Image (cartoon, rainbow, N blue to C red):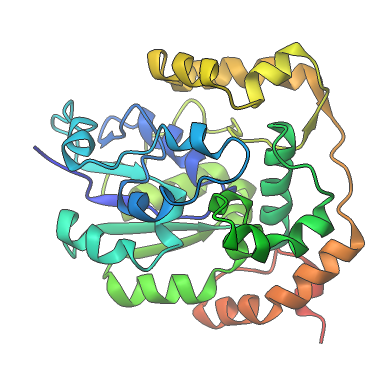
Length: 304
């Protein structure tokens, strides 16, 4: 049985899962029906379940190798076989497992996003799910306590926005690594996906019908029965998702539904922004030295 020859090993809320849907349309690429398998980080993530809703989310992670293989049972003649799981770039412990299962030649795609916008989007995601109760600035200050309490790493707004050392390690360990930023990609998605297709050695001329669809728009929404059902984690929702996988067409229908209830995204607390600028400024500087295109990120990172 053929297994992935490329991984999308980005970070939560960086847009890496949108690539799953673009890849899914390409006739030379195979993506499993379920996105975010988290197989190579399963042993780490399974211990993080103290936060509200964490146990429900973990029910979709794959920890058994035979189960992982089954996700690829329908692979036929596709040239590129993928697994898009944001956690893979976050943990050095995943690297030996990746190499043992997929070999040293597996290609790695890393998607980065303005780390402040990434952190705030992460926060708003947990607000929508009615899991996060603290204001953003206070939640940032609570991160170390949540780590000690074994919350899911999705609650680690700062940790998930620290990229440089993680990217450097992956570049050291694997031969074919493509690093792109969310901002440069969405500025010209058609050109961006063409570059990614070239990296995967599949037809770069293919244009997915969903190329203009932003699959994870984030932000804030009115609270009502519809948005509560769509966003909030629950055992019932878990059962539904296991019975009816979220295909690209269903994802588009979901997006169309929630757009009716979209509200203006609240401005980020200046205290939180300044806290993150000071915390992440050196990290962004390191990324610049790697050649990562950070010029579309928060201007305050570049003020001496």
